[in-house]
Image (cartoon, rainbow over the protein chains, first blue to last red):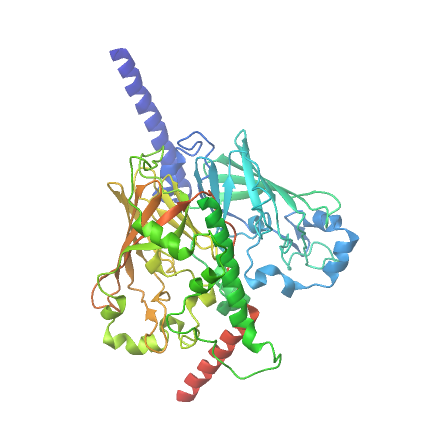
Length: 267
Length: 318
């Protein structure tokens, strides 16, 4: 009995010391605040045993232009059907739905470089975006999509997810076809139109995985038989953990106009 | 039975509002596509309520909003029959659910208007921080600009989803897709950031007092209206950056949650104001749906016209 108590005490001390050292190192490394450090020890699992994706995350902005392509967009451009290309030639930057404050769906939301917050509870994950603020409700139990009776097309689509090991695999359908897959300034080739159409047949499969206390990896596969000849894979997006406890409120309001809004977002 | 009622009522309410909004926005001006003189939107008759007009077209057997509200208001909580759900991680009440409609169980002891400082009159006449933007003498309200619902309602709109998560209460509005993230201080909660920018919905920090979640909301941007204007008699109930709200969230049983609040704004009000105690009934859904707020282009054009006119007026004064 007393030996067991002893073992528990020693174990606790060892684990505690290791944690303290780890925290000190994490803090020294990047001057992180307490909030990031205190959560770091329990990053691997939630209280109910699921992988823990909770936190505020931010990735570097990705895209294509002037010789660089960090989001596999040249590939995407090559996948558009002739019909889709014809329609894309008739549109321009001003037709980008985000100019009307329409929230971009993932994966586009993941390439913009703005913060994302994830909060979990048993059976659900919630994803909040700071830019063009909206929430996504993602059931994580592998249940079926919303039934047809209640399913209607939306900007962000209908999500359902399951855990594959420590990866949250999210299946998204029922988009309204208004969103774009990238931004007007993304022009990977000389022939680029800067227009990135989708259709209501789009189907997105996302993979979210926390690879260490401060890093969340994101990758998506986009199928859209009405506009793409083959599925398109995004590269891996690396989100880094932020030290704030929640995202800012940055509303996109009509009176601001898109220019003002984009300027506010940048600040 | 009540599931179907709620669903039908929700659909009817939404379509009713959409039809009315379209009518208000487009109806009067469809005839002339050319540049026209500014006419404020049609003012609803005093006391007119859209929900009444919607209820006139309800099929028989469907509970109206008024009926649902009365039923929720008269409901006697029964925690034995409907035990309070509790979270597996801290045993505190679990607020998770989709709720509708909003029923007042105790009205405010005094009207908010009675506490407004007389010297705030000029500021309010201009529309406060919405000066030159919101034409409150028409039927124009912050809602028409897609601002989040008033903080006096907890920034809650029509149908609202609450989510309890470790260290958090989340509020997800169906209408407009606004959300609030309320960190709860304690074992499971993070240290709240102190560096957030002022905002429409403020920064919230919650803590438990027994089974009641007490949320202090500060760091507002001075723009929200605590109550809309009622032209020509009541001015917009503007707020300031000194606004501070203390909310008390409770879950008497599994069928409802209750919401109380005290509003302080020393720059606008002579004393703290106790709002109504409200209650919402749970619906048999586990998610709200995407329903973004978009401004009708016609209405947007009117707002811009109004703003330009106001700017010119002020320029002339100078």
